[in-house]
Image 1 (cartoon, rainbow, N blue to C red):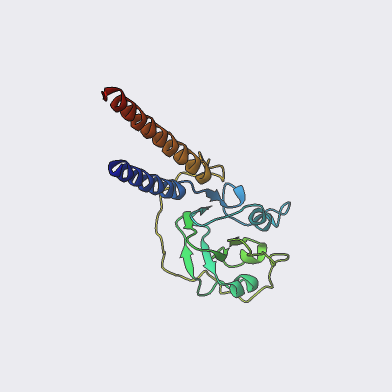
Image 2: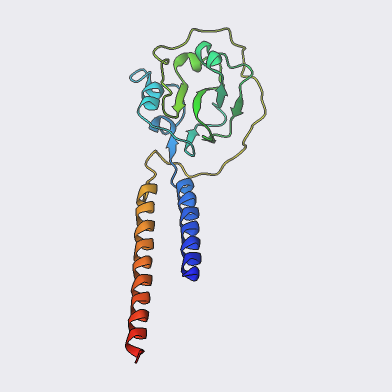
Length: 211
């Protein structure tokens, strides 16, 4: 019985470890705006990024993919205040490699815009909320214009080149964590039943051997 308990505990431990690994793997990569490139919205759909963010439920582990010509555009992460005023000075992050992947590692609100002068005022900006209970109460109208320098400021690239294949938000989650738990419990139940049957046969055989 002690040997069975040891195997049972080891199986539970391995199952939980596997579930944790799968939970990390089953994350989504979203191509921002579901567009071929991160850029100034068209006149037909000026609020494309605002609408896009409201219809996507982002979670920790997901990532945002910004695609753009590196010689013509960039992506910066900014504070809420800078987002509202389209202030592109002193961003939190500056990325200009043309293939920028931003990994979401915590709950909260994240604000992005182009690092090119004048682009933010033309609604090339994105606000996403990650986590339950975080409501998006802004983005109803473009922020006021602000005085901008003649050229974009120079900041260090944070992540450098990140080679990833272009994709939309159609990454498929093959199996959910709850399904994995159910499968695990079914396996454990089967093993327990098998062990009980083996013990029953052993006891039966012993009873038949008695004089």
